[in-house]
Length: 408
Image 1 (cartoon, rainbow, N blue to C red):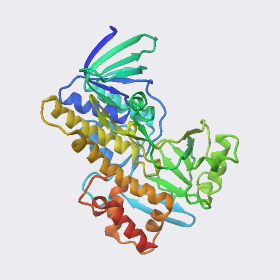
Image 2: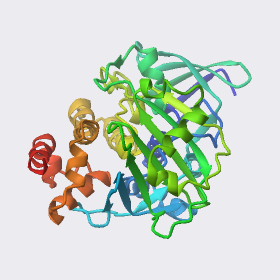
Image 3: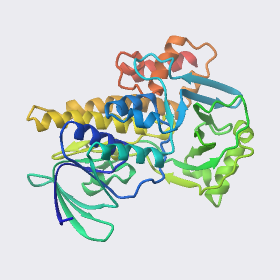
Image 4: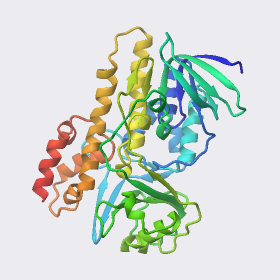
């Protein structure tokens, strides 16, 4: 490898948005290089995909590989609060499109997408750390350090930041902006769940509201190999009574009777991880010579598993815009990228806000649910947050506020 690298499109990060964007652009005939700081497989959260993701995976030509990988089938979501339980079947949704998906261990899933991108011709270079980024000249220039400690220089026609929580360009270019969400902390890990309950549906993610503190919640995501991802989300002060994460997660799980019963035989055989202050925003999703994809741009909250969906949506939008730009067609990055992406993000935001103030629970646990309204909400929970044929997308906040008032 020489110290100077030239490429058409340079992508930072080989996660879902980077691999999908890389594959789409490579398939359009452009040379794509991805720089990934880590070596795959590696651990990541965001394990419960939404059906909308499958549409993007299909567009990228990766559907067959994903379907044949043996991941846990997923057809909906189950919400639990004390003795109340309600389920959403994603196949019973308002929007057109795929109605099922998978629950995945992200180490395996992300490597699969990256391998598919490589199969299509994308050049992924592993263990490459981006040190500086210069967008002042005619072409973007990045300074990179490889695993041997050598300094390399890259020049591209365009750079996409798909670095996720690494948020490389937002940090290097001072693009980070407050989110408006309170700081929250998640404790999580993978366990051998040993769930022996015929009533438990492994085809759904289970979201449980803490029985005593309504803005604290748990996720339980079953995998196909008898293991599950389990986590709890709360404001940091909630954890102050515990000295270590392992004890905290077990004790908090035991505070909910339904989870205590389900996981009574569970084996906590891996380290419990934590992430704090994960919500993020930026001043702009694009600039001269670059655009931000997925979590590198904005991350709301894990409660509705929207992160990977937003990441893949951003990848598909960018691939089409860059194709037109490289063909010297007129593009408007605000109108064609930032605004449409933000519309879906804003729809998810309505539901995240309503989750934490309790109005979402008032709606989903209401005794007299109308099937047509439930189908519209199910579409959003399935990731179809850009379908403006859905009244609960087109006028998301006003519609939901009215519904919540009626339910209360």
